[in-house]
Image 1 (cartoon, helix red, strand yellow):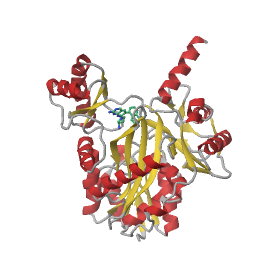
Image 2: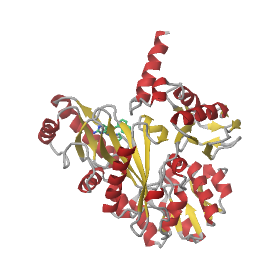
Image 3: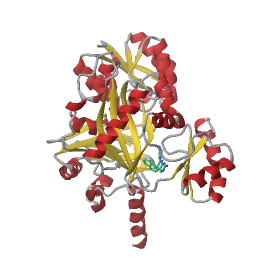
Image 4: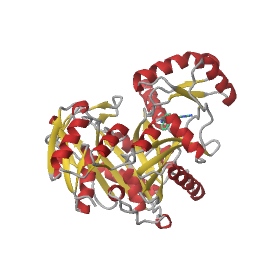
Length: 456
Ligand code: MV4
């Protein structure tokens, strides 16, 4: 096991990693930007080093500064958390060449999954279903039209280096397909430095289902059930839950067997997540992407499985074998996570940086709060707006929703506006209560609310 690691991140996830290290007896080094000097991760870590300016490019993305901090403090490993450098294959390579363990998968696996088309091809080869579409990059309007004719409209154009929904174009006929192709290529080039695009059949109102996995260096892999992340707005997840209300035992087993085949085929090590789109019209699910990091929503899986994913991730990175066997993994009850963002849900989720005056956190049975905020803390404008994750566990989905509602009513942040009122409404929404959701749920709900507002 490591004796000392550096955490190349900030906010709640930096705290989460420090806590795991404390329990594992590992000393921690925090790195921070100038604006984060009063952050909790700085205080909670055993050592802390300022690595640059507030802008991420000068600090949390500053590879030379982070590697220097690691060398100076003589750490054996770096945990990248999520975002920033977590899925940067170049950074993982630099760690390797400096003899520092990158707590995550190999650079090769990060690179493979970062190429959305290569990821799709490799998972298809391993036997996972993929959405019907072009096998190769679409280079001309003729190729685009041919593919569309083959799979039928509607189709979606995606950037090969994309992800997160950027640069996607939905097309319903030949005319819009031809005109969208050029704009999609230009957008892909502008956003990802790669103009390559491909085409898939467009699945209307799918559910976003993802499966958590972890693998060790001896080839032992586990699948830890699914999370339903359909409640999102503009590709930003707002709520995640496990299990999904639409996945039954049979489908869970099938999903699990598939992801295990998929990750074994690439000798995957560390935590990872395989994303699927579920077409509720046909009950078909399709591989979409793989995320090669620990994710924001990992706690919902921790709550239903009782497995500490961060501790296991650090253990396998240090070369230890996973002690848990697949047959010992049980999904117990239901867990929900609400993302509490410093955003105004009544004003287009506008970010709300600024100083927190009063803060009251919820508590009681089956409630977990992962947060880095405190009364008097100033939320900087430079980073994402996540200020807390409220996670609950109940015997079933209905109980979990009741606990979440109760916990949300206890949660007070002022004068900063947050997504708490949005979540309170969600916990009382009849469709949400029924589990009748899709990736379009939030958009439809907000549209409906806006129409009611206008007619008043
Ligand atoms: C799709 C799709 C429907 N059909 N692909 C969005 C993010 C990117 N990773 C892939 N995404 C989608 N791909 C086909 N063929 C719908 C989406 C999508 C979506 C997916 C997951 C979660 C939220 C979403 C919101 C809008 C669209």
